[in-house]
Amino acid sequence: MASAETLPAEYRVLARKYRPKTFAELIGQDALVRTLTNAISQNRIAHAFILTGVRGVGKTTTARIIARSLNCTGADGTGTATTEPCGVCPSCVSILEERNLDVFEMDAASHTSIDDIRTIIDGVHYKPTVSRYKIYIIDEVHMLSRSAFNALLKTLEEPPSHTKFIFATTEIRKLPITVQSRCQRFDLRRVSGELLAEHFSRITVLEGLEIESEAAGLIARAADGSVRDGLSLLDQAIARAFEFGGSTRAPMVTAESVKSMLGLADRGKIFDLFEATMRGEMALAIGIYDELHEVGADALQTAQDLLEICHSVTRIKLAGSTGAYLVDSSEKQRLQALGSGLSIPVLMRSWQLLLKAIAEIQQASDSKAALEMIIIRLGFMPDLPLPADLLKKAIVDSKNLPARGGATSSGGGGGATSARQGNTVMKLAYANSTPQASEAAELEAIAIPQNFNELVALAEARRDFNLMMELRKNCLVDSFAEGRIELTVIESPSPKFANHLSSQLSKWTRRAWVISLNQGAAGDRQTIAQFEQKQKSEELEWARSHALTSAFLKLFPDAEIKVLPITDPSLPPAPLTPSAAGDSADDSDFNPYRDMVPDSFSPPEDD
Image (cartoon, rainbow, N blue to C red; front, side):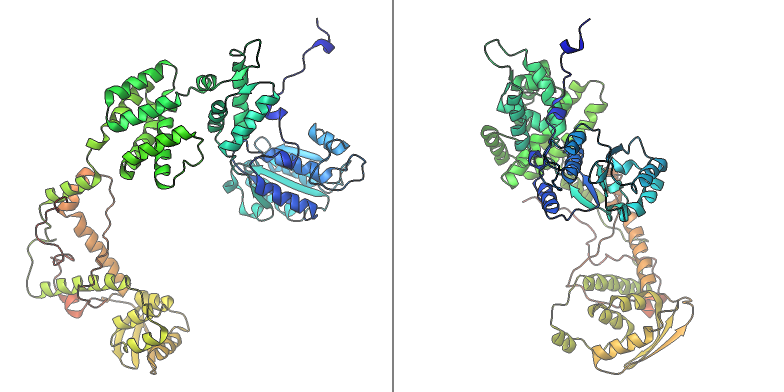
């Protein structure tokens, strides 16, 4: 049996071996490093911190660096809090080895109860044993229970001067706002692909290997901004690299081995597949995909690569850059060439198709066949009807626009229709106008209101929206004369309502006004708001029964029907409330759009 001295040293994964020990070693977090170093150097140290960001960007690492910075005593034991921990004093060493008695790390994912928090609350009042501060690092803090958060609040707001809290979470939105408000928040960003590729190349050299720049870029792209995820992938790639290394040179991490490890297709082949598909050359596209499949390309990953190219083409066409993805000069040229031959609508439809394709591939029993059908669908996409064409077809199928309730009646019914139609148009046209004149010009332009409708319009024009809403929702006019208004209010308004209305009218018109209020029920009368609500319901009912709507719903059964305002300034205005004739007349044939739309309609010819 081998002795302990002959056993090989335990291997440490790269993510632990190269974990940053100082702020200077953190990559991609310049804003956080600058703020924390300034705070520590000026002794403006908060009592609680929240570190948030996606997995693997350095939240726990940053928490440990803060703990060492605050507790470092220097090599001679006389130092104070510093932005550059010495790494040799007892506090630095014990924290690095995770055995410091005053630095407590707790995983909230497995310690969620109030009892776990009570242990912390009971311990904060005792002074540190060997270090300057007691520091509590709680990882995934959003996993704590509601009662645990509530128990922590008071201690978190006013902890002893020797205690610091550092929280780390990937789900900041799940953290109660009462906790967030008691802490300084730092958002750790995803690390850019360029920085990750440089970092991985540097670590590979330190490990005694070489790495191709393309291989480093592939790992960085797969890491998606996470340093830890990337280092885990680099660990795997280095293990595979020894198959390719010879006795006379250091092992090489090649792009070929990384593609094989990640199930990635050849990047150039993916571009060929995208180009052939968008040109509609289906035989060539399927042949390229067969080649990719034979060398081990994963169907789901291939679809994601196509999606990435679609996004990159769109970005480079509109913004001149490819965003966060790493591309070399040759790829950029190909993206630019693709962008020049594809329109934005085609790229948008391609994106939607490929996005849905990912879910289809995950659900399909044969992922290769699923992706082939998606490629074919993408290639024949230009032959699919556009939404605008479907709408034109629906308009043609609808033939005409029948009025609700059959033939148009004459006499009183016609009066009601015109009154209500005019009312609808006036209301919508006014709502889309915005006063642009100066205050003095408005005073000269606004006439004295002659009826209740003009009073409401005046309040809206003067932007007294509280007054306007009270008039619309709660008031019925009993009598209206210049200088005197009598209103019935349905519900008790503000005690100052009458005085406010009188003073505002006097201010706007430069005349004295007397306002009388009566309390009572509406009876058969309707407020403006009630009338408009009824009118909207009638318009929606008419729209639902229309032939055009029926034809459209056959094509799009899940569509939502909305009646939009018609804002044609050429249409005549009308009162905001139903007229006396309109209230008493028969409105069975009400059609608010009869005079605006011809009896038959054909779509315009294409230019």
